Length: 159
Ligand code: HEM
Image (tube, rainbow, N blue to C red; front, side, top):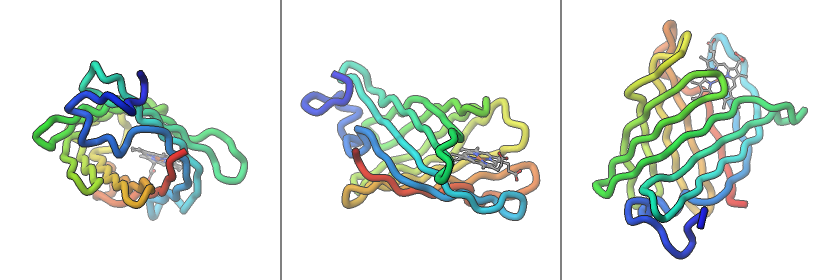
C-alpha cells in the first residue's frame, strides 16, 4: 500500500492529514534582488505502513508557460513525541536537514539545522498548515547578504 488509507504506521498517524497529492499555485519573491513571480505546484506525500516515514516530492512550473521550475524530494520522519525531522534534496543541488514539530491542528513548523552545497543560502524555515482541505505553506530563507525573509508562499488543494 503506498498511500495508507486503512493502515498507517503509528508514527505517521498524527500526520495523516498530509498524505496524498496536492495541486495549487504559489508566489515567490526575495527583495530586493528577486522580483515577484508566480508558479503552479504539485506535492505528493506517500507512505508505506511498514516504515515510520513519509516520502515527499514537489514539482513546480511557471504559471503562464508551463515551463518546469524548481523541484525537490525527500523524507519526513515524524516521532510520536510531536517532533519531526525532514531531509530534502533540491533540483538546484542544495540539500537541507530540517527539524521541528507538528501539532494536532494541522501545523508543521520546520527550521534547518544543516544546509549543504549552497552558494548563498544560510538558513531555511518551512511552515505548513492543513486546514479545511487546503494545504498552505510559507518558506523563508536567509542568505549571505539577507536575514531571514519570505521566498515562497503557496496554497494547494487535494487532488
Ligand atoms: C532565486 C533559494 C525554492 C524560484 C533564489 C535565490 C536563492 C533561492 C538563494 C537567489 C536569491 C538572490 O539572489 O537574492 C531557494 C531555496 C528554495 C527555493 C533555498 C527552497 C527552499 C524555489 C522555488 C521556486 C524558486 C520552489 C519556483 C517555484 C526562484 C526564482 C528565483 C529564485 C524564479 C530568481 C531567479 C533565479 O535566481 O533563478 N532562490 N529557492 N525557488 N528562486 Fe528560489
